[in-house]
Image 1 (tube, rainbow, N blue to C red):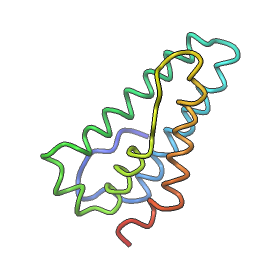
Image 2: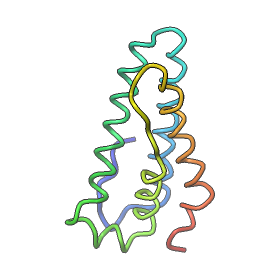
Image 3: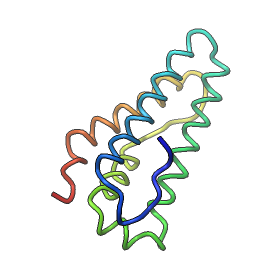
Amino acid sequence: MEKITVTNKVTMAEVTERIQHFTDRANEVHDLISTDRARAKQEYTDLHKEQDREYQELTLVKNYKIVDKSGALRAYRGYFGHLHFIENVYDNLSWNLGEFSQGQSWFNVFGKHIGE
């Protein structure tokens, strides 16, 4: 799934699908750790940059009103707010990749109900 563009038409289903993309991708990268740590680290770095760009878009002042009025976008912003990455070194790859699942767990329990 492609990046979510900040508009007032974003649905919770789109957000759910995008979050699933991040989790699935993180799990794929995690599987690489045992066979190709260098590639896993590079792919994690790329995934981290991807999520960071989307989070930044949701927190821009110019997007505040749209995000604030949309339960789906507020939940998406909350998902990113629950990702807590540590230093990007080999020993931390599993932790950092696991954060995507942790964020998805928060979203599934609490995020989906924002704006109801």
